[in-house]
Length: 250
Image (cartoon, one colour):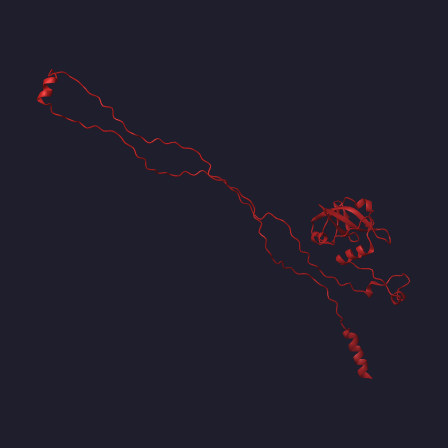
């Protein structure tokens, strides 16, 4: 990593899965050679750390060989302005990087003139850790819609109407003497009545209807696979065969 730390501030970090993780808000240098070693990436209100040793600076920002889920599932470290050795080691273990070890006097005597122990003396065993989080997604929508339906109504109503009857009463001799017997035209009018139904509608509110969510708690089980490295001793078959031949020939 030859890029200056100041050039990385504000750069957009993209994970190995192509997802943008966030932007670099702080760079921490290595205590030995002063090169940029770790960067704190800000995503919303969350800050996580990524190693800069294997990152690549592109025109779009910085790409790292870890996916976004791995980065956001990292340990929450409060490094302040300086990252301690213990914090750096915790991050190094989380990302499965080579961890410098404290050497005993016997090991120091086996070191070469360069003052470094050969990497071939060590195997680093790594394993995946399953990080389970939750996210809130839209699972569906429910909508209330008010329609106007037409309903046929039948309701009995009591009515009346008038009809006419002709009533004839014969006149007695006494009545004939009082009534004029002159021939003349005449008429009599009778007004008939009836009832008819009168309809009137009124709009009356009858209820309120609304939608509101109901939170339902449930327990579920997530299943996935994690990979774990295993280191076992494998004898050198060719060497043992040659040794057996030598022992037999004696």
